[in-house]
Image (cartoon, rainbow, N blue to C red):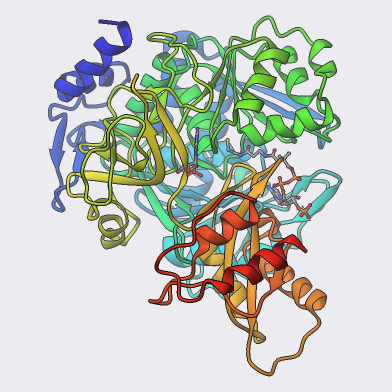
Length: 625
Ligand code: COA
Ligand code: AMP
């Protein structure tokens, strides 16, 4: 048996012994005696009687172990030209004071705190400060518009919002405070206070009685100790796109998460405790939660927090410069970032300028790693490149080459094999197991391993109906794919209304709700079409109400503006085309998949259930034009 098979079989056959062993690698306040039990809904919960604090594990524990002078966090910001380092003790002290500051605002265990911040160290500190108090953070990606923030405020009902005066994109400053003010105005839920960190690039006006100046509050705060929490108490809620306009609040617990984070650092990423880990992502996404903040710090690594882009800050050498300068051992980003680099530096001339001898491995996730990008990065950087598949819902990789257990041969287009602890199966519509190479629903047999969501925030029915009820005993991932004859997993894309734009997960259903809300529109379809750089881009097809006369270009501009205002620029909704009618089945279901296939120039078969086959001719004609 190979090392991978041995570990995989252990986790499969004796999950409790396997995870009890992994749980021994973190510093509990009270070690769990029960490893796995079901909750009142029959959902598996890990380590239910264990007591711990995630901020303790990420900071204080290392200081206590005599590692307080090691560098915990490097902030590298080409957009502000600032570079800073924090040792574990420095980071702990700052986090303890921010926790004290939150406590002065009345935040206690179980309260929610929404964090709407750019990629600055205080964003990570804010998360860790919440964890210290046992409060539940919910980070909202800075690229989301006020409406998205408002929806999350209403659902999470935070006592406090933490923000900064602005974010900095390539050559532009985005004031955050007006967005926060608008979101609070539009939301039925009003937080008690808004802590605003002033950045010199654009100071915010603190004109509301709930506004609190972060620096003043910080200076008058006292450090706060770590509050013990149960393993099953929530650490955070992270909203992610589903099929409707309302995002799903994925709940992450403390104990299972900490154990899985720790295990992943050795088994998947194979990085030593004193290694430098760089996840070039954003704290607003799950990758940022897990691999900018929690896992590297729980493991005792140095983590890099980068406020910049792979290109234009200032050039396509940015990633390689950071790797050399900070002696990065493991780099993790999205394929789209490397496609952007490849576009501007096809020969890899920038790569050659930097010493990448410390860099061991490059990991990618967020979307399928397309074989041309894999080959380009492998050959230009001359490093192993590992595709791994995961989701906000799991918090860590479901399938990967587990480089710390056994480096398996790479197959282009595959995320390799299930990580020990996960049981991946391909099911057909009847819930039967597919044979090798047959595509189907990618499902995970329960119990799910530690860190996976136990519920959707305050909507357990949505968890059951969205993930568990389709195939009893399984969690349905929402992705389609297949396992080949060697057990390698190939993820072929979403089978629902979710698309991936530049590694960002977005809902076409939500875009349809916004576009459909325009007074001129009778009905619409938004599909994700292939894009060389961003993987997918949304495309809207709209049918006008009878008798409405509008200029198509003006209408497109209005729809683009509407999606930008309500979701954010990050949605990249740039095209809306007017058509006479949408292709539908006889029961009235819009044939989105067929529209996408036509837009991508793929071969397609006319569905037998189509109501009027000639409706496809018009789509072909409009899309070609
Ligand atoms: N705050 C405010 N606005 C933001 C933002 C943020 N945090 N992030 C993105 N935006 C805006 C951008 O300014 C841009 O606005 P514009 O339409 O006015 O120009 C829009 O959202 C689209 O941004 P983006 O998708 O980032 O496109 P880009 O062309 O600026 O950059 C890439 C393209 C590929 C370089 C970039 O998308 C990238 O680095 N992607 C990697 C994503 C990633 O790390 N995902 C995490 C999974 S691991
Ligand atoms: P998110 O929850 O934002 O991390 O997005 C998760 C979704 O991104 C998955 O359900 C997949 O559709 C897609 N995804 C993430 N990683 C990969 C990968 N390595 N290969 C293919 N798709 C991926």
